[in-house]
Image 1: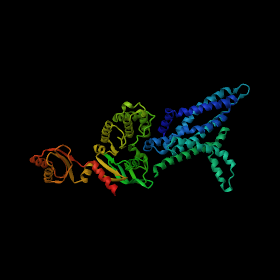
Image 2: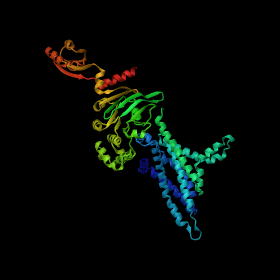
Image 3: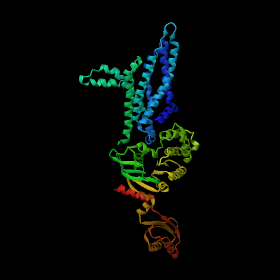
Image 4: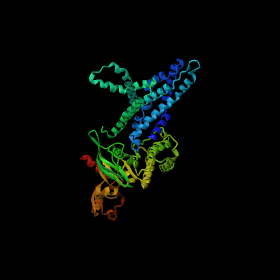
Length: 247
Length: 314
């Protein structure tokens, strides 16, 4: 798994993909930081992050679209699937590689934290930096990002075409995000109210807002980890199923 | 070494491979022969665990490819029809990656790669990007990839397709070299390639195994006669009569005039009598010089056509 992870991370930076992703993310992130933190003289990064989360949703296909689809298209998956590695190794290695690029990009934004730490320490108003809030924002954003990446990985496993994978990823992620605003509008009959619970379980955003508000709960961390686990399990099944296909 | 028992693979209503059973013995170079679309690649993909058979069983060194894939796959090096390369990597990076996924010990990687690149003769391109290599080199990188981890069996699916004649000769030479200390399976639709390299042949047609034997036995079994083509300067009827009178001759057919004042004949004779000497003497005695005598051995082509046609007509 480590070998696959390493190759995939390297590959992001051998091809323009890694740079494109980081470039877009950091450019827009910088604009948000300037608008919401510097211009409004705020030490709270949560506005920037919640806006960035929309951007990330749009940008995640860049990271995930070719993860598995291109291997299939180039038939290089024959190397991986006939090697002693399991399908889990392959999927997990690729998923973690995309998460690593996200983490690296987020690491660059630590510059903002330094800026805040230096300038938000006002001699008159005192220190307005809330370390706990910043940490929970970072963690929440990263976990939400992993959720999106997992979806992207699954979509990439479903198709041989990068563009289809990208569009599918975008569609599914948008749908999942809209659940939160759609659900309250719908009144389900009594017998079907369990659907409400099921759908709200799928809403990754609900948990993200808790992180953004500074609520660090283990339950939410477990939620994201298990959600990723389930989605990746589906990706593994998709690949395994194809080996048995008779179509 | 590898036991393939009754494997079938169904796509829709059609069988890509149907009830194929054969074994790959330790140390041999096995030719896997079939026309395009006969099911060669499907079979290879099943044996290597890339896809799963609809039914049947493959065991590699006693390890079932489905139940114990890790151990089974460790014994096999596979070069698929299209070499599974990553174009954005250099040859060295790529081969190191393959070492890592095939569990080659870190301390051994350098020597291992030096040996393999030397063997397949790609030492001079190790630092180059794979996408910039010629097709012949890409193919060799593909073979190098199959050799990593010292697998006991190396399976090569059409390794010479699309190469120029010189590269083909080099790759065949390489396969023979590999055969010295590996079990090699060479899948191909090119008959003389298989005849040149392999000791034993498995022939597949429309998904079914139609023959498996050594080349010698296959040629022997297919026909009890041997055939010659000869060119004689002399009158047609008399020459034909003279040939027919040689004991052991079965049929004589006139094949037309290829050279002025001569006739060509196709002679079929019992396989166990050599009619060449008496034939020569009898023609010489009559004063009709023999200008050409060429044995027309039953070739792999004939076996192949015969076997595949029989099946086709069924």
